[in-house]
Length: 399
Image 1 (tube, helix red, strand yellow):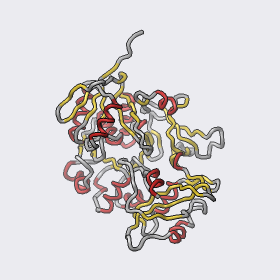
Image 2 (tube, helix red, strand yellow):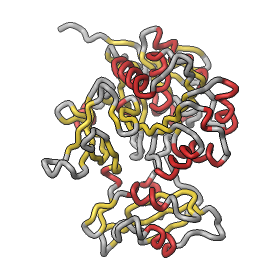
Image 3 (cartoon, helix red, strand yellow):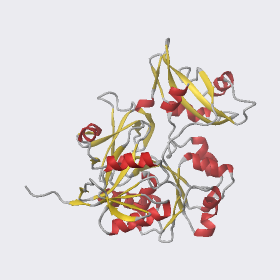
Image 4 (cartoon, helix red, strand yellow):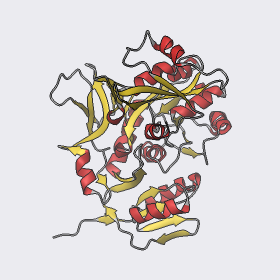
């Protein structure tokens, strides 16, 4: 039997700008890369390297072989370490064909122009940042890489560095708006990593910003749906288990941007696919015109009194309520309802926090009785992943 072609896998452990240059160099050499968090504790890095088993590590001491490392299949461009909201790391193998697909897709959908310059202010050890580098190689777009997310640096990037495109998570957008950053100076803001609250988008649009909402996963090289429209190579269907197709069901996707699998985990890979379709774990619908609408994470849906409640839908309403700076809705065990809707709220003013009665009155005309919160818990901050997704499991265990 002929040997399966393989290629080197280099783990990059450098600060963001240096990591971006290193990733480009490794790609030029025909290797795959895995960018790791340079600020992670040493114990975490050691554990990840043991699991990843790269052939090489590139750090401040240069590029050197890693003991026990193994290559990846030919055609692999990157391995992304992702824990999502479960806390269990997975190693997502992404392909060169997938990078080419998202590069073409974003270029066409956003109308990328020759004078565009892409700003990277999100981590490269997550797919959002790495995908910007991959797409830019396809479109030929120059890339500006900031060492971290800095409000003043991002606000000044259009004028001082010629940045025209920037990818953000909703939390970053909210902070830029609060700082009165000139967001209209960017040609396009791509939002991803977490659901984009409609009120936040409206505020940005009112400031003259062009906002594009991207939906995707680490397993799909990031966004494969922009403002509800799948990229050219992405096929999207809804799995409703044979029920009414108009009802929400799990979003399935297939296309070249979909991962080849999880490294060294054939069982998890098999579980992620059904007849070649990647199961996203997200609940959604598709309109008659092909618009994909994401309802929520399947695992986050709250079943209260026999009724399914989308926490994201409730959050979108409560986020507009007076006195609410940030909010996350979670289903908590309840002896009568099975689960009750609980709103964890960061107040604008600690001495005048919103009340349960006040929030229910505000949301009463927009939400059903089942959707209205039955409890409000005041917190200093909503725990989130680096990509901006709320860590509901953390809130559940802390309440």
